[in-house]
Length: 139
Image (cartoon, rainbow, N blue to C red):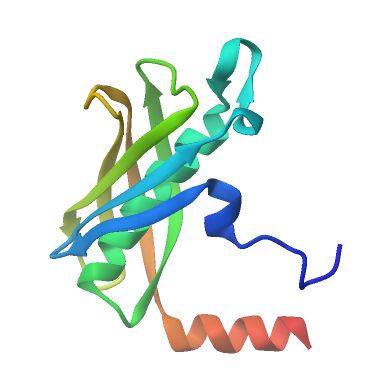
């Protein structure tokens, strides 16, 4: 696979749009596609986790745009299956410090039912340092 053909993270996760992102809160709309599902048409848990994790990261970025969020810990509880169709991941910051923040999030189906909830401990790293490290690693 060439770089030109590689999908973006947003494409791979089925992101439709960022619904909102301000004041430590974010909501992102995703399309759960059949290829993201396993037996019985249920979304694989990694997608559910990724959707909520992204919303929590966006919530963090809405408060600290010069910092890059890095997940240190992620806990997800699954309540009901996510099935093909639109879902909304919401994330918010419960408490933030200079280098660490604690976030929570949830995944809703189109009817507004909670399918999963998550909590995360996020390390905040200056974006300039992340970019420099990445450039060095890429040669």
